[in-house]
Structures are given as structure tokens and as C-alpha cells.
Length: 438
Image (tube, rainbow, N blue to C red; front, side, top):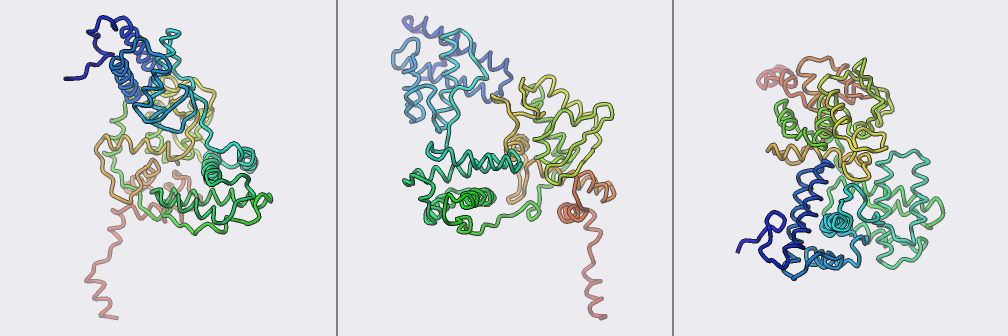
């Protein structure tokens, strides 16, 4: 027998009709509120799926209007996670995804209006309580060093993981840490199927935390020296994907520019494809950096510390304006591009911003060869090749990409210009004849 969608069609059971109608109405209000808040189609579909499954759960158990106990029982049955309260802290992602729609549903049944955009539960603190002071003091030092926010977030994640591991093996204070603890933690990470670059990044930030602990006298041994050497391919050692102009156009066409997130992603991809901005600078971008009269974008590059002024094409400028006026959520964040989830802050890492390109490329049907980088940064390579193939002077390419030296441009991007490299190829017979003559 086919399952009935209890949100999309009326119930046939008269006894439950009134209650189910209330659930249906409340669910409908939540969906309307999500659409008004410009939530993605995937988010709306997920909420509808949870509402349908919850309605079937209530019908199967003969329940009327749901209580919090019904919600908790449903979450346990659906995800296997046992919660004692609907807003209880949990690190279970399935449980978080299941309860978020239910919180909105219960708010609507209680007050008649879903509070979309508000935090549904306190932030889950991954650092054990006994080590919070140590972790926070370290992060304050990182702020005083003027570390980038993305770097501080990476260091916090590494410190939290290591301190949680120490709690798990029974260490009650930081001065009890031994070299064997670090070995156990590292073996656990190596078996976690992380990418080599992720492991390399973890090693780097964990070493900084361990040196801090040693320098401040909190641990006797400099355990950073005990970390295994870790080498992972750097950006220059792996070729970025060679985007064609047609592929970039197909990706841009795939973006839904009527949706708020689509407006944001379209402007981000276009800024990178047309101006070659690094992802780090794209994340930091502020509205005051645009000179709309002069049609320029001026910034100080995060990577090199050098100033960079770029011409602002009309389509790029209008894409940014469209997002600011019609897509960007109300927020005090200074950055232009923000995450569309409360509290609407800037992107916390380059990977989270850069993954948007791959998402649309997959929808387009583009298949990336193994080992080739295909994040937003790869569009810089495509721009460099496009300029070189139109015989743009190399110093101009260097200036546009914001490199401190022409050597960097040559090492990373000239090798991608296969058309000009073919002109440099030597004829095999000429080489052999030259060797015979010698």
C-alpha cells in the first residue's frame, strides 16, 4: 500500500482529522516562512520530508497533537540518538537535522508563528570543560598575534580534538600529558581516512598549540617535536583543472539567480573567474573596497600584504549589487559574502567558500580528473591561461593575479598555457641530427 503524504493530502480517519489538520496547517506555515526567508530548495525539501515522516509516526502511534516527548521519540526512532530535551546539545548531525524542523513546527503550534533564523540550540562545545580555560587562553594569544580568523578557527578545532582525546583517555590535567598520548591521538587521525592535505594542516596547527603549552610551562616536553613529518602536495605541485570558457559559462548558467544563495554564489564565482581573486580575499571582501564611480576594486591582499587595484567589469559589479540589495540577509557582518544560516557570519574557511563551485559543476555534469584541484582557486589558472592565450604581456598577468614576483606567475601558471608551450617544442629529428653533428 502506498504511503499517504499527511502534509499534502487530508486524513481519512475522522478521529484524527482535526489534529492532523492543525499539524498540516502548522507545517504549511513553516514552509511559507522558509520560502520567505529565501531558504534553499534542498532545505525546504528536507523540512517537508521530516514533517511527512513525523505525521506518519503520529498516525502509526495513534497520537493527536504532538508533545515534546513525541518529538524526542520520533528523533530516536529516526536517527538512533536519544535526547532528553528538544534543544539539548548534541553532536549528532542526523539528530540535528531531524529536530530543527520539529522545533519550528512546535513553535508554530504553540505561538502560531515559526521563528525561522533563530538558533535552535546552544552551540555544541567540543572542548571538555576542564580544559576550556587553557584552550581560550591559547586562542587569545592567537588573536594578539593577529592570526587570520580562519587560522584561529583551524587552531581551535585542532586544540578541541586533542583536548577531547585527552579527556577520553582519562587525563585530568594538562601536565599529565605524555608523548604516548600524542602518538595515540595521531594514530587515530591517520586511520580516519582524512585527505593528506587535511592531515598536513592538522599537524601544523596542532604543533603550534603544543609549542604554546610547552613555552608557557604547562607541559614539560615540547611535544611538537614528536609529531611525525608530514608532507602534502602544495598548490603549485598539482595542476588545477583547465577550465574552458564554455565550462565556466555552463556553471554560471546552472546557478539559480532568483534565490538569495544563488545571487551570492553567482557573484562569488564571477568575481573569481573575471578578476582572479584569491578565495581568502573573496571571503574578506568588504563593500567599502568597491569604487562604483571609478569602477574599480581596491584591496590589500591577505596573502602577500600588497595593495591591488582591479578594474570592475559591469556584469561583475551588477552581480554584487544584486546580491547586496536582494539576496544578502540583514546582518552586522562587514564582509559582503555571508553564510545564509543564522547568525549570518562570514565564511569561516576557504574550503567552505570554494566548495560552491564544485557543487554547481557537478550539477552541470563536469567530471574532474583525479588529482586535479577544482575549487574556486582553480579559476585563477583559467584566467591566467585566457590572458596568456590572447597575448597579454606576462607582467600584466602577474599584476592582475596579485603576485609579488613574476617568478611566481611563471612557476604556477605559464606551464598551463599549452598553446604557447607547443610553439616551444623541438622537432625530434632536429635534436637527433644536432646530436649526430656534435
